Amino acid sequence: MPKFPTFQSMDDERPPTKDELKEMIAAFGEPLQMLYVRSRYDAFFNERYPAGSSIQNADDTWLFDFDTRMTRAEDEELRALCWPLATNFVIDLLVGVDNLVDKEEGDLDAMVADLLQLAASYEGAMTDAKLAIVQERFERWRGEAGAAVREGYSDHLTRSTQTHFAMANALANAAQLDSLIMMKIRHHLDGLVRAAATAIDNGPAGPKLDLEPIIGWLTVIGIIAGAPGGPAVMSTVGWVGGTIQKILTELPLEDADEPRMDSPDPDVLHDQVLAAFAQVAEVVKADREKLAGELVAAFEECAALVASGDPAESSRVIPNPNGVDGIVL
Amino acid sequence: MTGLEADPDDLIDAGEITLPYAADFYDELANRLGAIGSSAGRGLIPTMSDSPAGNALGEAVMRCHRFLYAVTEETADSHRAVGASVAEAGYAYRESDRESARGLEMAGDDLTGAAARAFDKADAGEYEYDGGYRFGNFDRAEGGSGYEDALSGSPRQPVDRQDYAIEPEPLFERAAPTDRGGDREPLDERGGR
Image 1 (tube, helix red, strand yellow):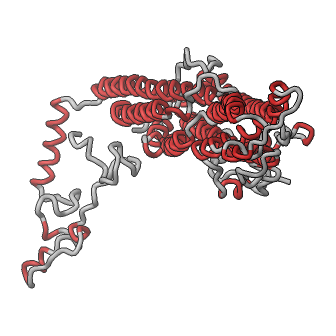
Image 2: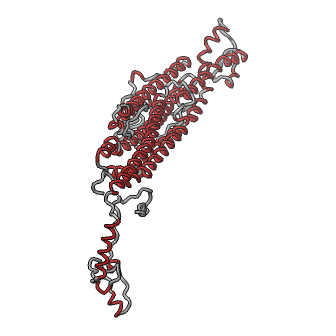
């Protein structure tokens, strides 16, 4: 069951920011430490008291949330053993978040807005840069020279402005997608962190974190453009939403792949969480590589025209009656 | 203009005014594109150089961004170069027009003769070839000046130029938009002719 039925609902419900995610994780320290204490206690106790102990240390509820049968000093020693373990666990989570949420969405969004504006300027070149006048003048130019300049240059002015427009839009779309991927990652990490919290709460130490788990968070990665229409921000010119929708709907995780994060044993849980991070990274990496491939393929068409050596071809991208040399992707 | 390959003024205007303007326009776009790239900051290039999820899309954006930048710059250069050579062609056409017009010039004697014939006619009182207003022979103008009304009645204000039988001078065959932008009236760039 996906968390979001449509793209819009995902966009409306913004995921926690990177800092909010880290705050959630920072709260894991105490309960994790307790989880480690419980998991280490038996071994530690058996080592110190192979024959059993008669100590009833009723006072250490302030230190641990259960009574131990060791001395206070030994309690402290056990805690000192577990504290770095819990801290490492938390640090691993924080680093995982830092690694995955490594781009500024705001910067990307600003770039998208700028590129869309720029695309509009490219599109308006025929009127704004008065190229239409040039074209019309050259229409009236009879004779061979006129024919040559039309064939190699002025007949392609409209088409080249359209090509520029499409390229700028493709860049805007790509930046937009990169930003959406960041949002998707944060949604995903939100689910991951909550699942980890739930696992910790379900451990013998009992519920402490009380983060509401998200059902079906793992399918979020596949849902982004599940609904028709897709992201409204995308420009429909250039390298477009069709690709995007296909790509984003193609990536639902199989149930079998769903990382399990339910172990009450902190060591196992640690491995499970790291595996979940690795899986997110892997899915996102494939996602990005595929999108990057599509974007480059769209630009390679233009680059091929430019490199064709025939002015009638290259002028579709760069209007120049002498052809273009040395512009490569 | 009939008989010529192109109106030299069209080409000179396009080459010296319009195309350089277009080139500047594209240069400006290239500047904007460059600024977008350099201010994209951590959107394009994350702080962690080795993110486990990679930055394939961001790198592709940078690569394509660079290509579009080169294309824009090259387009600007191309417009500028075409402008220069088209203006040159315009001057060449103008020069050859003058060359060919030279043969059509009236010789001094011919001119004298033609003028003399016109004066003969004028001496004989034949002004019919004239529309009526230009040489002041208002009394013979038909429906033109209202000279007689002016003599007999109250002063009469002409309501429009047709009262003088003056045809508005036709504008040159020029496209409605102007070379220099904005909504201004076409500049009379050929006033000297």
